[in-house]
Image (tube, rainbow, N blue to C red; front, side, top):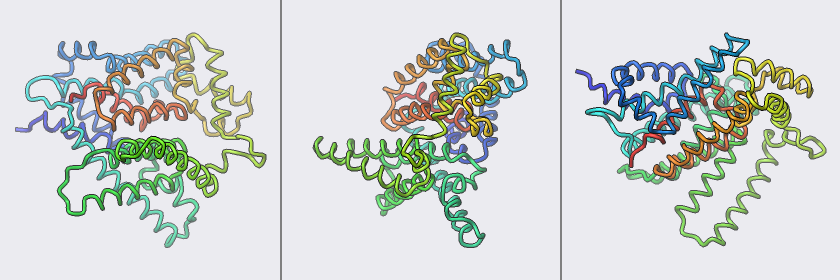
Amino acid sequence: MFNLSKISFWLFLSIPSTLFLDKIVSSILIGILFLINIPKIFKVEILLSILKNKTLLFSILYFLLHAIALSYTKDIDNGLNSLEIILSFLLIPLIGVSMISGNGSKKISHFFLEKLYNVFTIVGVLAMTICLLNAFYKVNFGNGSKDYWFFYRGLSSPLWKIHPIYLAYYLNFLLSILLLYEWKLKWKFQHLAKWSLVLLTLAFLVLLSARTPLLITFTIIVIFLYNRLKISKVIFALTTLTLIIASIFALYGTNNRFKELFNENGILQEDRVQTWRSAYEVATTHFWIGVPKGDLDTVLEKSYRKFNHLKGIDRSYNCHNQYLQQWCYFGIFGLLFFISWLYHVFKASIKTNLILQLLLFSILIYFCTESILSVNKGIIFVSYFFTLIAIYEK
């Protein structure tokens, strides 16, 4: 007879690793977990547990808010599609609580995280290896451009054309695991393997050239230096300052993704600035109740036309800022709801470990430059780790 608790345990810890694959894989995995745990999910004690856990409750309320917004959405089809995408905020908390409840259940503890880290590291390293081998083949045997295949979208292309931003987010998490987790493997060359993987991940992130993840990469390195190396505060401060200056000059001098931030006169011309200006105009115009998710794309396009943001029109940009996105969706009260939710996630993270705390910090920074909760890859990533933080037990 199958041990459903054990199967659920392994499937649940595998969800983050499936994000390196096609988006349908993680969605199917969540669906299977939901079906396995249905007998427990709708028990009264499970629902009461969720009501007592504010982090999980906010997650489910977030989904319900979008469902309620359908009642005044003009574009129902787009609204229903958007609701389907954020279904993880309803399902993953239900799955998580059902897994840790009842006889024979598995707890989300350091043992669970150890397994999750191992699986995520293996899959992440395989993903980077596949991308680099593909780039090498395209450049040397396929008449491909080195400037494309070893850079940004070209580099991440083999992974079902995953957006490089999201791939870089996952690799930030991988880097924090490699640097901050105390590996207990009994390998003769364990330290050599670890630092080889660290260098591989750092090199890959630089090649990938996603700007916000590079900022997080720098933060991870600084935190590692502060926590693991016994150096004085003065030396630490000087080292940090040196790293900042060297990184700025190196990236700006060698990387087109940073050069294109400014025009020939040294004036900031990044697309996000235009996007944020248009999104801010939409948010202030619909200050109190916002614009339902199904209709926001149309309203944003009108604002892009007003400000002559041609790239925003051509590529149907979202707000590229999750805080602005929430304000646009539900008005100022929706933004306050979102901030309250993040506050409760932060409170819950205090009882976890440095890696999960750093991950939460990273997500809050990602929210400043991306509307992560508008994309399947980001929604599952955030909903999973918010749930994990909420149900973690030391």
